[in-house]
Image: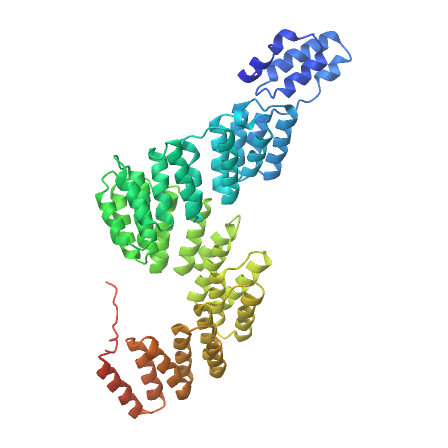
Length: 539
């Protein structure tokens, strides 16, 4: 029998014969982890007394709650167990409640644990560790406002400690929500835990991710002992803000580097468009003999996706298998799909994509982009339709991908998706969306329609849209619209030599050599040099 049960009632073995039916019910109600020995003695006593007690002894006992917790795999199951705990009156079994909260967290059902906590006769009498566990689960899996509401409930009637804040600050950083996080910072000061290492590190990470690098740096500089975790948080903040030089300077000062600091630097380079530098940092990391984690390989795969090297992608795939990185991790699996798709291994990307237990918009877009990059745009359009049929809500990036796919000549589909974006999903088209549709119309020779679309753009037309029109004019030899597009581009991008070259090529393709000379003369006067072509030879 569990120790909690032993304290709340006499030992079951000593009260055999005092009413076997009541005893049987008590054994089951207490949720004894291993009741078999007691039930065997109970059955023997029943048999000695004869009918009707034999029937009572052979009734199949219900599994104890603690055992059922280990078997729970769904949100419905955990909700049923919550009702059972309340019905059996197991509110005072704090160890059981802690296991229940952990099970809710594993199934991403924090609201169930929170509702059980609220159902306790005195929720504020529950151990602080249990309340913090529920709070952390809400911060990880629930909307920020739910976690903050639970925090406010708890702090009104019970004490808090340093473990009550890091999870909430992390949630504020993910949103990001500077206002709520700043209020939490003030609460840590009032409670006197703002100097705690875990709290201080969470605060640095929060301010860094919210873009308040001055605040993050001030908290970092105030630390008498700067931990690797604090360094990593600040490195991540500078990298997110695009200040990769300062991030690298901090990284170089950090002597005791762990996998998290290496991950922050690799991801920082990848996020800022420096994939080669990310790979060089990774080479240094491998020399340290540190085991990689999921975050590190996600940053590594992001760098590889930008390079587009299929051989490198295969090597990273093997590296992940070698170190037994969790392939069930959603970020790892999505990263693998994205890397293989963009590097041209569409077969591998498709297998991984179809194996995903849950496919989101990003994973769909990854495979769609792969098909666009490697010659099968119609397949990308099919995937977009499938994504909609699965009830996923496309974002602006998804529409950019599908409009790019339609530029292969799918005019009607492109128009349909452009209208869908505005009228069905209420997404305001960006300059990139307009540019995609202009490119589609221009490639198909519908240059006047493309020009009218540009004129209908709210605000100042995007240079990408004029560039797409100029490209269409070059393809179809339309001098008049080409001159209009080029003139606009000369105003927007006066030093972009490519626009002059494109106009010059339009003239050359129609044997207007005098105009070609005029364009070259204008470039010379403005000091604009033609981009020299080069052939890259891989050694």
